[in-house]
Image (cartoon, rainbow, N blue to C red; front, side, top):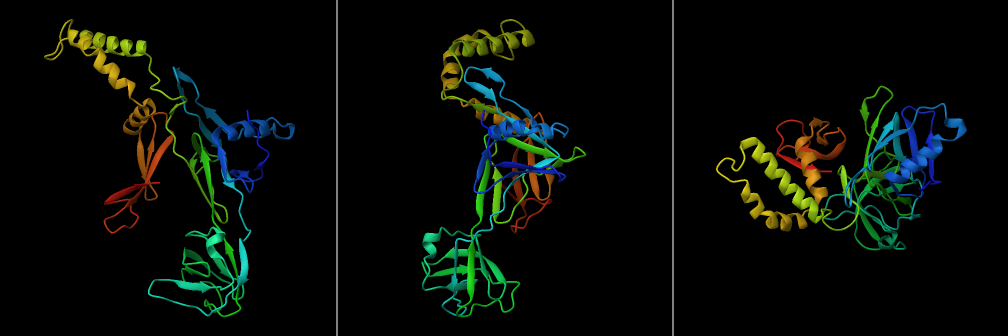
Length: 318
């Protein structure tokens, strides 16, 4: 059991906010369960509604367990906002342009490549109050960004003070995470924060916990015996639709060889993906398992690459 000390709950909000404090950028579903259970057990919180319901981890046989799924009750997860800049300095040249879109910030005293900047990070012109998203870092002293907006001049002048703010990539790992509001309606389990891009890894309802096929030799014999018995019961002892029950015995070794290489987590995922429900909402197609938990979602686009809920031409997994 792992109880983390970097998680706080804003009980006064609705939905309540489960805050992963900076500088942490990741949390596992199991750590989330352990920590929130500990917080709920504190005397001051005993009268509040439970923050979560957790299910899963039941054994399915040798080497297999059901994946863990957490439902947040009138609560959402957030990673604390990040307001610290990685660099503050002044521009050494007026606004520059080249043949590509965007504007160029030049600072001959900078070392942009060493700051770890990436597309989507922010540059703010403190002098005139404008800001923009970074497109790319050209070299140590020049970076390209989208046009400055919301300022007085939205141009660089020599001596303009600027700050660089990175976007922190944060992740929820190790299981499924869903959430409902106070009325029981499904809501996004993760809420945004300033300069944070948070996501959750998709997880199937079954997870392999050790290496190997997870299927014993006796399991393989039982599978083939069960198939033969079912077919015989359905079609009559000795034959079925042009075949013969005895043929199963002749193919036992072939079936064993096939099951040796099977990843049963993938098999379970395909079953859930094909057999569960799905819906289209806010330009996304969302797939659910047969126990109604989200397992995958896609962004939907028309033939021109625009988000759409109709006349879908392409889907892209998110």
